[in-house]
Image 1: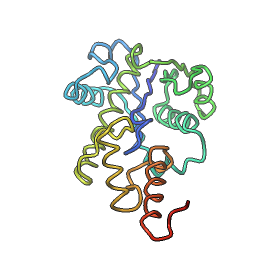
Image 2: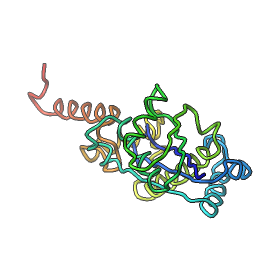
Image 3: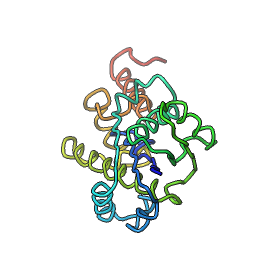
Length: 217
């Protein structure tokens, strides 16, 4: 029986893409023997090496979702994630898929993913699946490596942007400076995120106050 694990990287980021990955196998033990684990528990060099091994030995499907696609999604993030998880699952045609739940109610998220599948596949949705299911751990590694590469490419273009997460002071500083200089967010930012909306609103308010009579009070 073919099974696959699904996970993503960059869901909560304010800069850069969201990357969804699926890894298929016949036995999760084969992946476990590589030493896969939650990607966040691995050093970058080890993630890179494992990602290469996974790609060389197992079927892999990767979906990269741009900030523009996220901003124009027309649905909740959970709905977008469920559709995206279903897309990578369908590409590998497994009989069983284990997904890292993106909803507080894991079973509800599994049902969402299943509703977008037109192939016979049982979906198991679990919180922290990347810690307990080798196939999901493998998917988390592939997704994380792909996103890290994308962020590195963006650094080469834009300079230091940090990790791309709103909790990163370097990322917030980059956004503040970019908005101040260009009077709007960069194309690599998720404009629908509150972090970006708040920065733009503050900049627009400050711009109004720079002109005589511009004080709204």
